[in-house]
Image: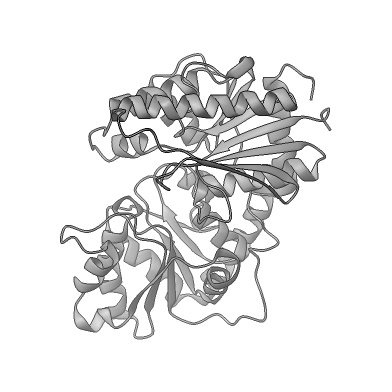
Length: 395
């Protein structure tokens, strides 16, 4: 084990607030470091409350600073972003004065340290994939060159960039024009004890599950077209989608409502949008009951959702783009599909629904793959070694 470190995590997502992949990563890092005997301080940035306040508490052994930041109204937008960056830096300095910080940890979308870190504290940045990478991959324009530059500068100031897949390690530097950066690849960890098979939960024949954000880049439009084909062939087939609406549809309604309304009445009866579910209870139960889980994303950098379904021991259909071929060996530990082809998505679903032997084999190999690739016990020591490396210490 490395010498005892004091790690400071700066994040826009952290429990008990609802969170996605960034919050999950920060929880994994917090709990892993605490369990290994290190000190952790989390600065949870809230930019949406409309007020300025600070609240300090303890969460599972970590010191947590809830920092609500709303720039003065007289500041223009760009100056307001710089004001928030200054306030974050001040908080880090305060924490560092009270107990020297060994390393800072942020994600690539933060842009919190474009001008360097307070007291030159070593910075480790997790490459999770930003909106700018997703926009680039989907041939969409950048929304803000200013924010893009804050993110790029923060990554350039990092001692180490930690990519969550081999794909990410190439795609993110190419998107941001990063050169000569130290990049390490560490796949995310999954709670394979929680996300595990259960003999007490029966599989529901024909149940197709999608558990991800409801947005275009997740392939939901193509999935709607595919489910029409599947329902025409399989009388018991039905699709349940768990996840929050990220954006509204063209009509101004939530995208889930718009997608559901676009289906023929006969298909509509077999498609259910469940909204966001608690991951450790309702979502876990849904995954365990699934016959097959489908994730036809256009762009991901890792894919927590398919990895968790694999850990539960489910046949998983994932995209053949991005990190898909890294996570799944096609035909052995899952199936890969072209996310732009509803016919191919439907074809892959059909393979699983009509072949119990194939479903059983894919499910067993998926579980074994998750235990080997996404194991928490090996992930935490690897991440802690990177912080020691960033600080110049010997692991």
